[in-house]
Image 1: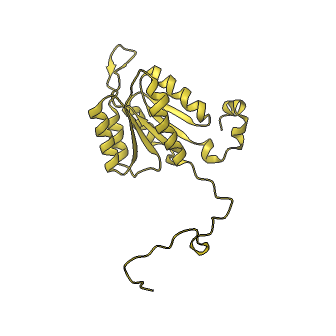
Image 2: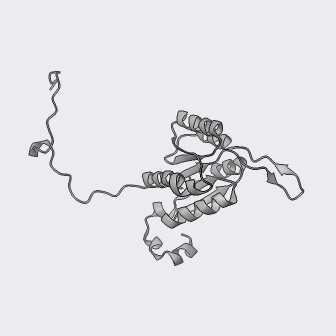
Image 3: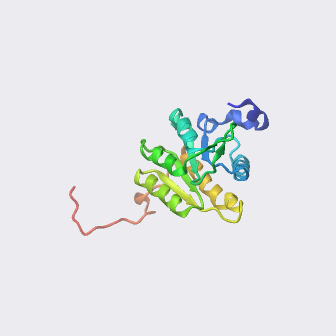
Length: 194
């Protein structure tokens, strides 16, 4: 576990392994968006390890070597800005659709994907590719500068993280059912085969 985080959040040492190892992978190249995203996620999920990527190739390369059981959510932007190199040349970062196609070609993971882009055509293509491959996908359209991150994006991310986490076992027995008269008896028109 990250010792720096455990110093600020002492209860993290008591977390089960699945919380201590949770990862979020985010394809986003805009600095302001990244700052808002990490601030919002750390406010609610301080144990979450967040990795940002600014190119599709870089993200695919990293995902190829990952331990997938640790990945709880993936967030993808579609349009990425050209990347300037030290020699003055530019590099094409690709698009979120390339990452979506890579994900669709591999077995579906237990994690969800949140697509966040203002590019309607690109976003819909990403959702279609992932949905056809049986991935759980949420679509968020950015609005009002960064407000969408606090509202729609964080809600989709939170839902994905909570859905991934193992559910606690019920400590009390389930209430009695039909025998105690609490649930109605269902009848059918078909005769019983027993």
